[in-house]
Image (cartoon, rainbow, N blue to C red; front, top):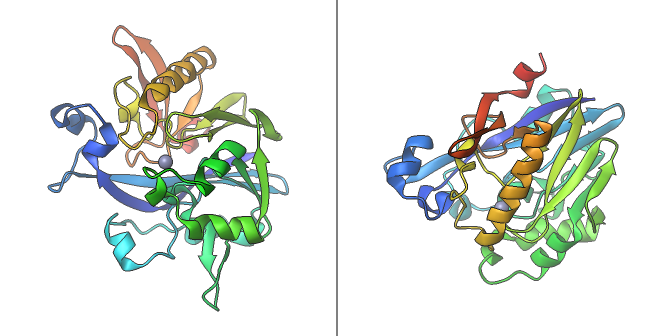
Length: 280
Ligand SMILES: [Zn+2]
């Protein structure tokens, strides 16, 4: 088995919204904002190659929305989903399994594309799409607060034309890939845990967007249940310390991975590194 980060470009989001109740004078030292108070976030997906199996986790924002929509997010960076796959010698048709942590547009946008006739279709037409049942029900009947993040064009084509597998409970969904489910950010967010070379690599998604979100009060304003996020973090950290997990960040522009340590101030990152560096 091998793991490859798949870079799909960056987006900018308001730093205040990303750090919740933490004041800017504090978070700005950890994750700097530009003159418009925007911070730059990667959309780093993960490809697991295990023999014939090619498992892609999340897909970035994609390219099918209009300029007005993308104008709110200041997309930047040269990487695209297709280019990052093709640099490794793969095309979207090679993906056999596609795990979606959740269905917010910056995680699932690349999973649906427009074809030559202008119709929406699943990008990974041979793939089984793995989504939690709770998230599927949550996203297909969205609440008013999250509605703007669940775009129907990212969801309906998967329902109508994709192979869909809804995960009802935590456990091993594919060989050496385990789904853990957290509910603070959105209902039924999957945090995939991958057994790799004797270690566990966790794809953090929006449970912990970046290393700057490790201290307890750093919870995004986007989270639907911030008190539950605190519980999610506490239980994840307990497991992560116990088993020395490797945290793989989707949104941290500056750090691909870290591990954790206990300090007098609480849980903090120990070392930051890339997968390639760690497993060299
Ligand atoms: Zn999200």
